[in-house]
Length: 250
Image 1 (cartoon, helix red, strand yellow):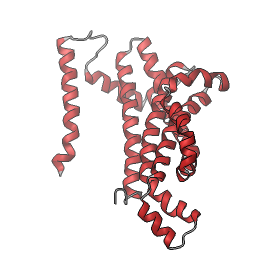
Image 2 (cartoon, one colour):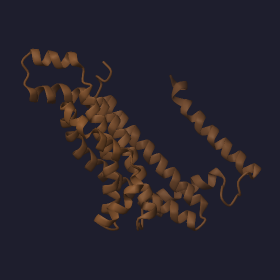
Image 3 (cartoon, helix red, strand yellow):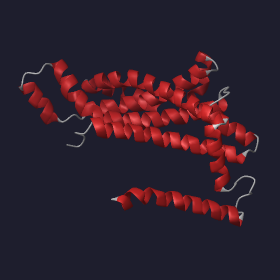
Image 4 (cartoon, rainbow, N blue to C red):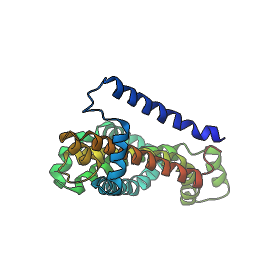
């Protein structure tokens, strides 16, 4: 069991080894690819006493707001659409169309409507995440196990009770899939928006500024911080799902 827990470290060690090899052989210009220890030192210093810690939490804040807005809108709407399959089929093309549209293509529209500022970054991220969550919630409701639905109806449960006590619980595993995908997409959109939409902080801004100043250790440190944030958010939702949606797949 302990050996299995250490398996992920093998990939990390392999990545660091390849990085060192690229530095030693000068496959990449040393100015553009500093040694790993410089990047990790910049990460620790920036998170503890530098601006990177502030930028990290600003990105967390924007991503959290975007995901919360998306969930509040998409989960109830997904339940209602999933419970009425004809309505969902009527709107399926519109949902899939915007879900397939790159969120970056929506930046100009949101800038025109909401202007430059945090509101635009948060809302465009919420827009992208909401469509992903909506699709998964509706799919989960529509695929609720028919035997459980029939059992509830046979026992005299009202339509509202069937919706809340059976369909909602049955859809939770798929809802968490949507939430994990949604928060990941929200983070991507927020970081990209921080790079290009009038930002003065955030991980995207930190990556872009470091690249412009050729401060490569700081650039890699910000990239690592963004990657760690994405991994941590996904892991957090996964742990909550395992803790509270223990009936998934049963």
